[in-house]
Image 1 (cartoon, helix red, strand yellow):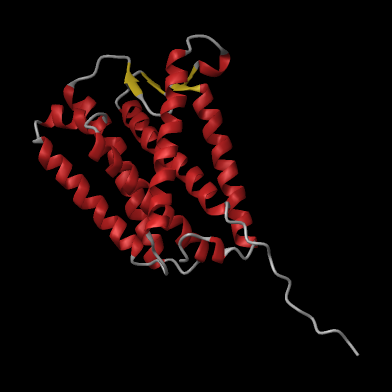
Image 2 (tube, one colour; image 1 turned 90 degrees about the vertical axis):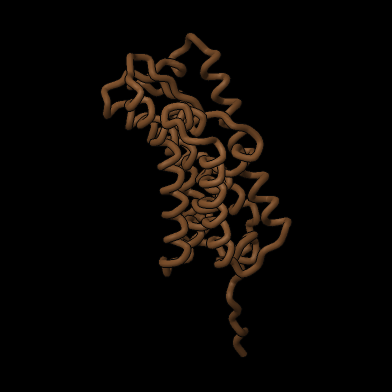
Length: 234
């Protein structure tokens, strides 16, 4: 008599979602900064970029500074919309998962500072365009809340715990980048803190490692049956 065969089960790995969300969030934030960097380079401006801050070191007119300021928020909005497209149009579960994380992180990253402070890129956009502060705030809130609601519509379950987890992870990623940024700007010596084509060398190295880690985590995600461990089942 032969033993009945059973399908091997895979141990749930609940850490995969917060880890992949945080890594992709970090990379999204860095793409925001890279957009600033590429726009500045397009105008031939000398720059220094860190994890969460940038500075134009050469002379730049008002139009050039406005273009550099807009580039970052434009990238963030593009990533949020691209994530939404993946959620709604992709037939691959991993792509949907990446899309959901892109849509939610970039939306929360834009919304959270808007409620607590008025600094950074949007301040410069207001200064250079003369647009009313309330108009910029309202456009940001309306746009990203719409993206969030559309992303949440594609989830199978939703609760205050999961939403709170997303908000906490987003704040954590922003805070860690802020702390790392303070360290980079406070260091004047050391090979890792020297500019590499206008970007701090340690930022380049960290982002390469973060990208490799994210790819590895997503490969593991595809191999294990951990859908029940996901805060959001897509």
